Length: 315
Image (cartoon, rainbow, N blue to C red; front, side, top):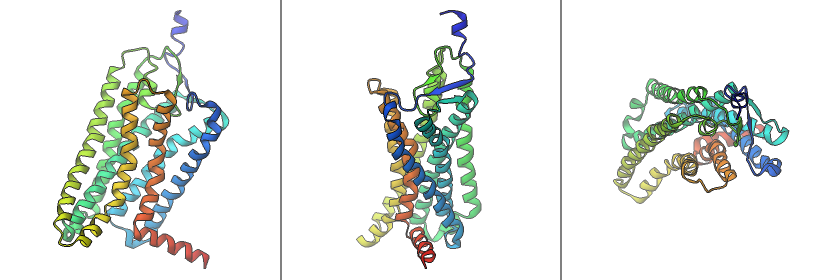
């Protein structure tokens, strides 16, 4: 390869996103459920924010964390889905190098925040069940604000190396990304350099962020279950455990797709590329869509306020 050709993409001005490779003919049809899920995520999360803001009785730690989760879900889905739909509908595949790095940062930053918020919600469940009389004195508004700030700072700081590492590599192979968004590994795999630093940092971030979060959630629920089993009656145990169902569903919606996506990306070398991309899209789409549904249906305070608003408008 001549020098002129090898330097074509050393500093690429744009990347080309393929969407879902191998399923280009079905892009329009695939876009229908994706658009429906994105619309559900937008409407559902804005509804959660509206109801919590409107109702003073919901101004407590659990609902503050729920609002943080809703904001995070809105940003995660909006950072990838509009571009995906523009690829599917208008064949708008180009994305500038700077926009690609910005999208990469937002995806990794707010994914980390989302996981951290679930840890904060686990802490709220632990205090509410194991120390119910001290809940309001332990999780005061200043403490909740500090927890929220810690979650934001951790996510923001740990995501910073991703765009900086991606920017430092030379890209002399191609500028075509076989995906619908600029994920870190998807981008750096195009580099014509030793990218082990990027791979190692990705693993470090996975274990230090997701791994530690799962550990803390597991510890919290171990203590919660111990407290539940000490309750005197079966009805009391079921009622107390029922307050955790929404949070456990939210955890499952986030971590199960993330787990399978990570495993496939690192070990599923014989799996078709479109399967990788589809599972990754589930991780990007499903949690933001399911979280407001889970909390809206399972949390009687939110469901009750929503019904009041609907019936009030009808009357």
